[in-house]
Image 1 (cartoon, helix red, strand yellow):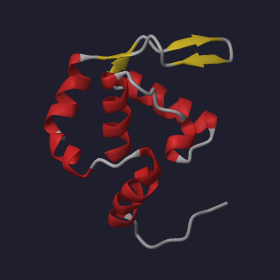
Image 2 (cartoon, rainbow, N blue to C red):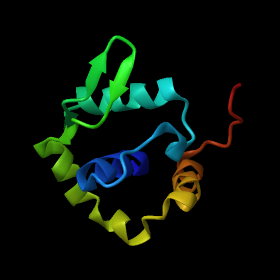
Image 3 (tube, one colour):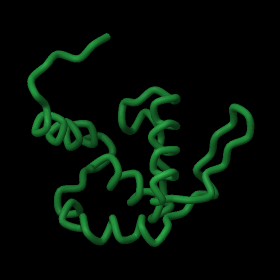
Length: 103
């Protein structure tokens, strides 16, 4: 939920577009997550041309704005870029079953 909030927030603000490295994701993982958000109706206008991918024309939908509004409480703890992974890790640990990750 935090990663969704962060990506939608950054797209909405438009100052610094989200990048895979911000979330320690590989490029393909990040693109797949963006496409998931688009498929679920949170964002629209993600640019895809063959292997080229860009969030510059992307924008939030009404559903995306509603998500931001309903999760506004996350803004109180929203970190700077350098602390993003700690912030996301706290949620990961909360929902983890304690199993080790696969390589």
